[in-house]
Length: 424
Image (tube, rainbow, N blue to C red; front, side):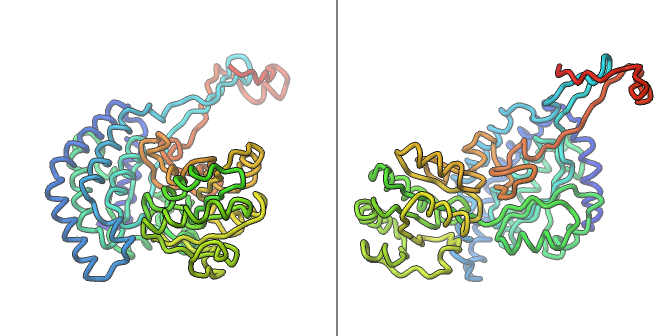
């Protein structure tokens, strides 16, 4: 089927999905969950074959790790669907109720966006998360994963379509397979309402430059952890190690560590030891290298998302210098301050221009599942419509319902009726 045909089918399906009761959407999620469990042995075999092929092609280590759809990821997918089912319906919520004039009432009500195209990296679990989030929020979805995960993704899509058969309309979700498919999808502005690309800044910019469809950019994750002079040293070491090493090939891992000069001598040696024990290669500025042995950091390191066991370290003189560095070099994704000083905390929270700004915790918490959103289609670093982990609410928009009893604008202009603008 041509991409235009898939987009048209998705548009038609979206009209049905938008009015499908939440009980039916949840029933479809349960069917998808059961089908996935049945398919898992077959999916596992295919994923192992995809991984072997990727290894032969010398796929980068971080991408290989994302490609593996192991038992833990399979359990997480099933758990994520349970969480989605348990969440309240995001549709039909009244967020404003106002009397314009007696007998004429205005309501703002949440509704789906419509048809969403998502282009994401080589993570098979992301396919399920995105498709099920779109389903719960009443959206149809066109999905394009990484080439190396195609075999696994085909089986996952087959399982989901089988599990939802008879409940959801045909065309509610479809898998795109090639780069040419993506190029053709970008031309379907008549049928597709939103594109969500997940990848590098260059990739997101390419998508924006080549489509008339609105784009919600999920750019790279160049995250920072700043250790303030007032930080608890032991706690700061624990959090920093988690932020860098709990998972390496993810957008919310810390890539640059900023350390206040007054705590550097006490903090850096134990932190460096703990990071090296996890296999992390350390790069530091001149002041850092006076305190711990590490390789020199180049200017390019301050704007590099490693997605690997590499951490750049810079010593700064104040919280304001840390904020300036983050706002200049960061990707506006997620950044954290480790501090006991409440003034420093508040200065950081107000000064850092990122989707997630944290105090005394790991940047790894930037995740839709951990936020209680069920899952996420990505983390938006933009500022329009949705920001941060994009869950159910980020996949909804709203419409206005105006309920009258015969009123006309002419009557208002003539003073026959008057506006009250009274909130109900």
